[in-house]
Length: 372
Image 1 (tube, helix red, strand yellow):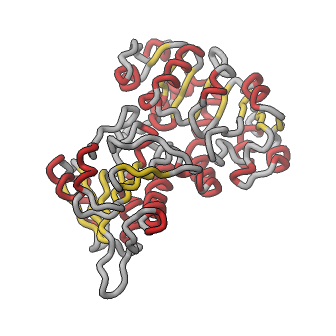
Image 2: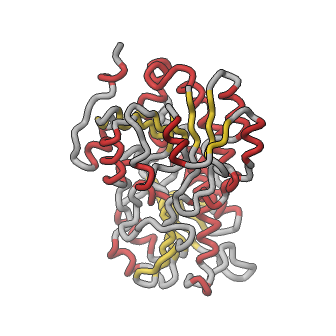
């Protein structure tokens, strides 16, 4: 198969979808790998490393899309890329369709095959290609939140872990999944007073068992959230519904209950956000303030630590990329059920129900395409 790796062009996105090591694995299986010039530089990989691995460097993004049967990316295509995508071309990347209708319509119009990292799902309901970036984003949420609590950045002026004789900051985490768990570990390690809210009692029992003593669990409901936001210094939104828009757990009116300088970090922003006043920001302009509350809503947080993020992501995606390259998307999906829910759009039809429902668009059962 002919595989293309374009350079990411989203604002301050420095990750790359394939490392030289990954390129070598694909090349030794007989595939042709084309990497756009300087695609890996932001993550610390030079063009020469790719050529040594057997890949070919192409000078432009247009050439990379033109030649490839399968495009491997990190983030969803943005508007300048829409016209480059070809009918029947396989795109393997994060899409987060349910949060952005123009992207969904553009991919439907392209008649490409869109296989989304975030909805690849194992039999135990885990999301193997979302986990590594969720781990990075969860940890970064505390790093960034602690930073923006500083007074020069319009925060409350609180040190996350406090000092002897001074209470630590109160951190509220909405969601006890991968993001929430990693955020809790980081916040606890820095000495904060941490509360995780979730709707699953089994999950909270697990977290209560494994977390240190400065982490508490609490049932997530509107009443409890309203009470907790009054006292929190840093709030992390860590809620995910696979493939669907995140629910608004913090509404605009709740901001009036918060202390001035409270910091909100919405990790779910690329799926619509679980904070009503959240809107996607960039690493260049990461925050804005509403009602004296600092909002940090960067949609590609792991892009700020591209070396770590690229290695973590490609460790997870490469085995699936190899299957897709070896067998094609249809046979690979027939042989590996994990890939089936990853299929979101095929040849102009939406085959992932939550995406179709998000925009009231027609839905087609994916089995139409997988049946022999």
